[in-house]
Image 1 (cartoon, rainbow, N blue to C red):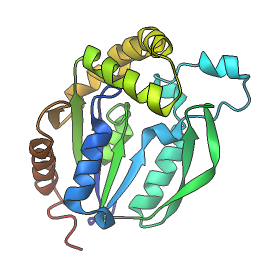
Image 2 (spheres, rainbow, N blue to C red; image 1 turned 30 degrees about the vertical axis):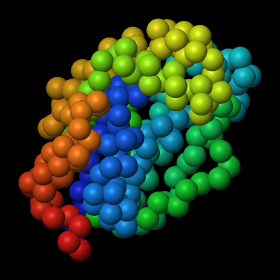
Image 3 (cartoon, one colour; image 1 turned 90 degrees about the vertical axis):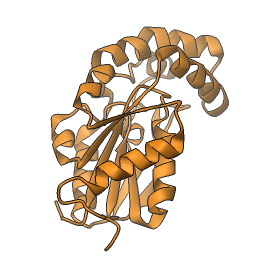
Image 4 (cartoon, rainbow, N blue to C red; image 1 turned 45 degrees about the horizontal axis):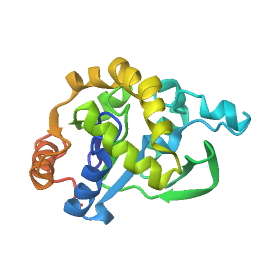
Length: 213
């Protein structure tokens, strides 16, 4: 890995506040200094399945992610190369034809449920952050998000949460808290969380002032 690149892994349960933290960190470090790889963008394409079967898929287990593509693209960005990262359509459970061009930057944030799950990703990360929030608060946020952004009813969101989200979080996501260098609250003062993450990155070996060029 180039000394000028700091990989920051940000994990935690669904709707705990990971994306909000990432956006606040991008503003703090300035967007031109940051690249973001959202793990959700790398869900496996389910276009080969009928819609009813897609709806029954477990998207809350690690095997739902195309890890080969994610790790390949992360390696390219770290090496200083641009990539065309996928876009996932949550309403159809398919990978969109469009792509987003991701340019290499001094700080690369990998964000998602399983950001702290793979050992290889943990080893790459200069800073490992876990965003913590109680399950019921996560569910309340997920109901709002999925109704507005994904066209789902509250009943559908609750059924999916109890069938997949909660048990998979308990099995795969919550245990990764122990792998974090820093745990921040998903409902705490955002400015304080940003300061703590920035301090962690600034003091990580080989990553002092990663935006200095």
